[in-house]
Length: 474
Image (cartoon, rainbow, N blue to C red):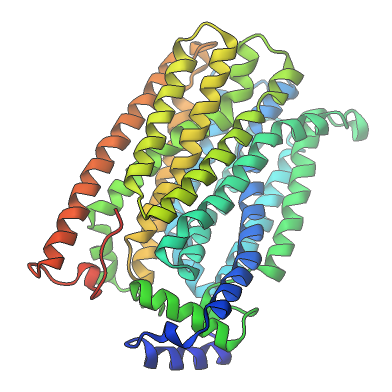
C-alpha cells in the first residue's frame, strides 16, 4: 500500500533529520502523550484480535468433551489428532508469503480480510455433518490465521523503541491467554443453548464464536492502526515523532525494499533460526495447556463442568506474573536472563504435574507451567525483535518465528497421545526436553551477541547489522 500524501510529506521531513538528535525538539510531555495515544489505539484492538484467534484455535478441546467426539466419531483411530494437527500445515507454510503480502496491501486491509475469513470458517464448523468436513474447516482456519501473529508482531515493532517492546508484546499476547483461559467456561455456557435450533452444544460453540470473530474483523477494518507511515489517527507532527524515535533507536523507521539478495542474506542468519527454535520450545507447553488442560483435569477425576471451570485460574495466574516479568525485562533491558528464569519455572511445573500423585499439587504444576510458558513467548518475540534491523529482515524473521510456533502446535498435539491417558508422561517428558534445548539456545545466542558487541566497540568488526551505533540486546 502506497503511503498517503500526508505520510509522504512526513517521510521527506524525517529523512532530513535522521542524522540529528531530533528528539530534543519535542517536549517530554508531547512524546509521552503521543505514545499513550498509540498504546490506546493499538494494544486493546490487537489484544482482542489475537484473543479471538487463540479461542478459535483451541476450542476443539472444549467441543470434544461437550459431545463433538461422539457425534462425529472422533474416537475412531487418530481422527481427533488429525483434526487438531491439520490446522498447522497451512499455518506453517503460509507465514512468509502472508508477511510479503502484508506490506503491499497494508496491515489494516490484510488483517481484516484474514479475521473475517477465518471467522467464516469457524462458523462453518458448527454445521459440519461428518468429521471430514471438520478437517476442511480447520484447514481453512489455518490458511487465514497464518498471517496474524507475524503481522501483529511486525506492526508493534515498527511503532516502539526496543526497550518498550516487551511490555506491549506481553499486553496483546497475555490478553489472548486470559481470554483463552476463560474460553472453556464460555464454551460450556454456549453448550447450554442446546437443543435450540436442533443443534447440539458443541455446534453452538463454533457458531457463536464464529459470529463474534466476523464482527471483530469488521471492527478491525475500521480501527486497525496500520504502520506508522500509513497511519490515519496521528497528526503529521506526531507521526514524525514516532518515526524519529524508532530511527534514533535502531535506524530502520523507513521501509526498505525486499530483493532476492536480501532474502538470501536474511535466511542465512543462524540467529534467526535459533530464535525460531526457541519459539517452538516455548510454545509447546503453551499449546499443550490450551489443548489438553480440560482433558487432563477430566483425567484427574473432575467432571465436565468442574474441569472447564478449573481451566481458567492457570491463565489468570500466568497473566499477572508474565506481565510482571515483561515490565522487569523492559526496565532492566535484559531478555535472555529473564527468559531462562521463566523456562526453569516451566520445567519445575512440568515435573510437579508429571510425578505428583496429589491432584492439588498436579494442578499447581499446571499453573506454574502456564506462568513459565506464557511469559517466555512474548520474551522471545521481543528478544528477536530487539536484534533485527530493517523492515525486510523483520518481515522474514517474524514469519519464520511464527511458523515454528505452528510446528510446536503439531508437536504438542502428537506427543500428548490418547494411549498415554491419563498421565500423558511421554508428552510431558517431550515438553521438558524442549525447555532444556531452549536453555542451550539462549546460551549460544547470548555468547554470540556479547562477543559481537565487544568486537564492534573495539572497532575490530564493522557496524552490527550494517547500522552504525547499533548493539545487540542480550
